[in-house]
Length: 417
Image 1 (cartoon, rainbow, N blue to C red):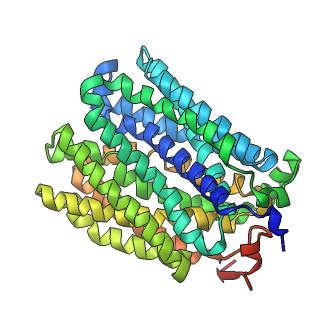
Image 2: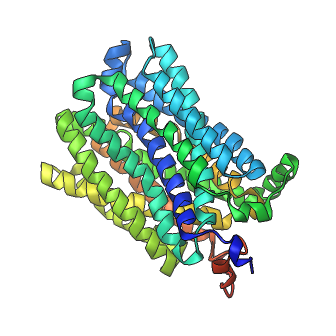
């Protein structure tokens, strides 16, 4: 058992969780401002909406590069410094997007932004998961992942109140505020004790661990690809769907986005807690069941009340499943590569699922917006549920020798190897 004096205090644990949560929140905010301004940016740069959607795809494509670079740094040098560098990097790029003079420059900047976004999740998740007692992992996993929905919600609020008066460039300029988070991390967040215990100070050894883990890693990539189909397929084009199909004004689109992101936050925390009691895989599948029964009302419903309720419940399920992901991936990852493996698998999923928006938009041209979204998501949910249940979990796996983790009597490995 670790020396009592070396154990992180409750305050330090809270700071570590807050750093991961706030980093992911601000990262998501910077991503989703583009989602709300597809039409505006199309007019500003004199290109089609499809070209603006392409910038979203390009940002997603670049995320694995960021996950690999920053994840490797975090497993080699610790969690704190790479996280600070990452936050400053993506904040600077976001500000520069507001100064973009042309579409080509904007496209390049969004590609560079994707590298920063790809690096944050793996570091923040490993830092948070390694800093808390086992009994809190499910709930904190949901809280951490809900940062994505908080970022979406804040983007909706900014679109409602900042965009009308200040214009699209300010939406990117306020995205530079997360740089201040680096100072918070510097002053308040301690280095992970679990990293100190399992650290390999040789990049080659870390990469060797990744190569030796190739079979479980391949499975994680498949699952994360399906997870990306699930979330981006229900979120990225939905504001445009509301404007085009339901003829809603930008004001009502922003209000509905706020409502369904509240549902996402509730779902992430709730199903994260469920997974702590019923297991990671069962928690995910229960959330998926909620989503699939909501698809008809979500895609084919009419009337503002029905649309609002369906969008809320849909994201309870979608982000409920996602709320289990941080803890599930961290428990399955090798100790010495806990930033690299989850983050890289997560972002490779983004790479493989990056055509999601383009596919859905193409389906819309052939089958209409409603059937495009509904058909894509029904297929995704069914395949994802099967893939999750055929996998394994390491519910309760100890990360280090802290006092809380030392109390664990055994590690429960469930499912096939």
